[in-house]
Length: 330
Image 1: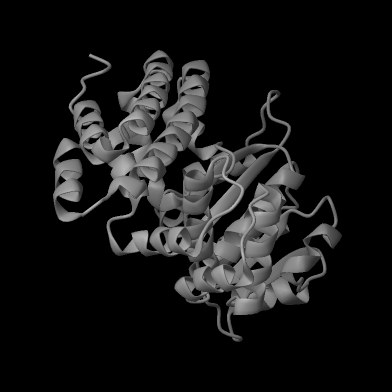
Image 2: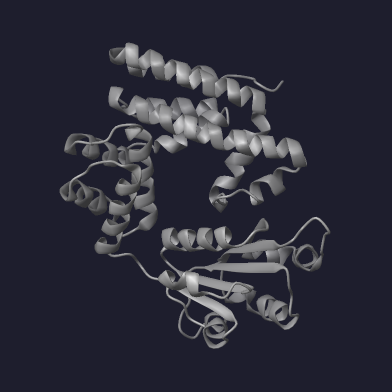
């Protein structure tokens, strides 16, 4: 049965199979997060190709039950009609205590997978169409209201124009603004323009990811190829501390279960498939006590920058290069 994205709350609680398809990756991610919030269980992420190559282990995971697991949630990413027969087989088995979310790209009208989910009442089919500017503007307004940040509609329009109708781009821009604003209650047009133009350089997120992965060669390249200024430094630090706290949470969980793949796959919100490899590297590099020490160091660096604003770039660059050369777990 077809559901609109705004009808997620109307979906019956015991639904097992979900199909999300379309180009709007940001909207699909939002829908998946809503489904995860509604259901408790250990999350397992698969690629369609991975299932085809490892079909026996996939079925073993699907069909095996544990006294310690109340429910499993299986997410199949980058799916297509190639997975149709496997999904049809699972439907025929009448499986329970499991939720299967199929994250597909564009599916044509004649798609067998799409046709199956559209026609059966107990299957959920959610098409995700591109967002228009009005939708993105409403999402931005809700974000700034929740963050208690005063901003004009003109500045919201500047942000929306930068997103090219992509909700993922909007989320990236809003995250940069959240990291920058911290306790600020109002942002100027000049600040907004500066923030949304940061994407012309390497994403600051990429800089921090490689620092946490201790990839000093990539960090050196990013720093050499970009012209960060003093205003960027606070955003860099806020992004750094946000990511460090996420890695701390995962590292603590990893020490409990001793299984890095399980830790990554069960993360909430889910870790996007393309980020999993670098997160795995980061978890192999950092132990909880060292991350706690790093977070304290970041807070100290922020205080130092506020006292020596004109030397911000020098301070943050030295800090990042120092951390990227650390051998913290040897």
